[in-house]
Amino acid sequence: MELRTLRYFVAVAEELHFGRAATRLHMSQPPLSRAIKQLEADVGALLFTRSPTGVTLTAVGSVLLDEARALLDHADRVRVRVSAAAGVATLTIGLLGDGTDPGVTRLAAAYRRSHPGIDIRIRDTDLTDPTCGLRAGLVDIALTRAPFDETALTMRALRTDPVGVVLRADDPLAHHDGLRLADLDDRRWFQFPQGTDPIWQSYWNGGRPREGPVVRAVQECLQAVLWNGTVGLAPLGHDLPAELAVVPLIDMPPSRVVAVWNEGDTNPLIRSFIETATTAYRH
Image 1 (cartoon, one colour):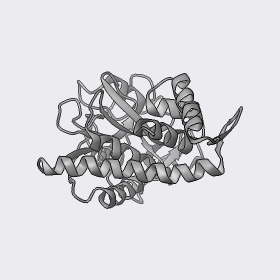
Image 2 (cartoon, helix red, strand yellow):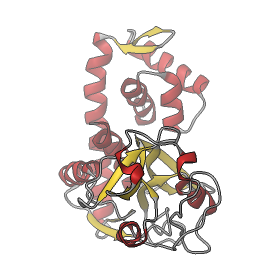
Image 3 (cartoon, rainbow, N blue to C red):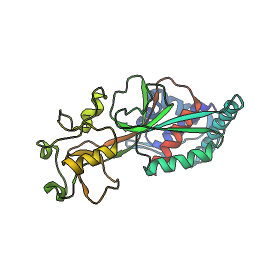
Image 4 (tube, rainbow, N blue to C red):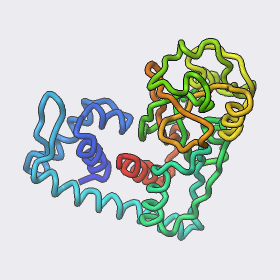
């Protein structure tokens, strides 16, 4: 069995859907289906029970999943040890000012356990660069939020978060159960500095041009609300000072937490990091 085929199998087993697995593997579905059928022929048994809505693992498939994960983990450790023998292996991770995310905490613990010999370096960035220094070559991989310009980048979606509007607690709109973007048309909104990715800026401005104070960091956003009554968007679920409130936005597309790296980067540490991150953010 080739490691590549086992990676295909694990992706289908975790997604339980050939289409989603193909997207995750950045390949089309027909060659993925052929590879799995060939693997079933090699094993001599069906690995999946197929249906119009997806697939489920057979008993044989469940056994192979455990063994495949163990083999792939061992292969990653071999690569890491060989890299370490040639020098200290390092991985630089960019974070978008969101280090308190429980997904990051789980990922850090899981990656430390599976890669104890790796020197992990963290670069925390503000809201002006959603790629966290990736394009500038300052990091190997970024944990950030989409959307932004994806040219020459590869992305893996990890989670989606609903978005709300941050208001002062005494704002008349703060007591609503939900709001629409049109309810905020007459308000001043956060702006990012000139030169910031326009796709990123547009998303956080609700898809249309706005006026308001320029900010660079999360704390600047919150202070703009407290001092000026500015409104801005934020993912739900984050703790805020008692003086602030967040109201869900009914018609706002969710914010996507993503891992992103440079297209064509073959660093094996990135692949193992992505697999660990996918599991950590699923829980």
